Length: 136
Image (cartoon, rainbow, N blue to C red; front, side, top):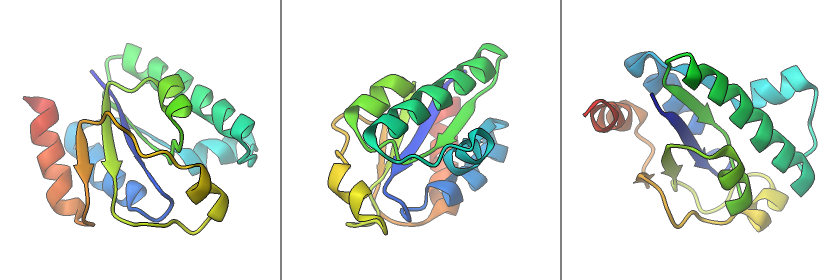
């Protein structure tokens, strides 16, 4: 089983792709906004983002140890946050040049390492391609 990160700027299509992919691979789904809501933690500073990456990783590891694929969709804007989340598989949604939050745009570091880079919004197509890649 794999811990799958769907990452990218706000508005790039992460949640839309996750909604399509999760049922195809029978995965557990961690949506960053829902996890922040449950934790009542809306701090988007560097420290808040680090806390969120650790929180998301902890929850994902629990599901993975239970024998599930886990799909986590969240911005994960820095190399440090991606390292803390420690995904097995990275899907980078590189579909927009700028998100709606300037602070996120400024801190976003494009990943150097990823498994799939998506440059067009087409969740129906990409969810099937990703399923094929994961199930191989």
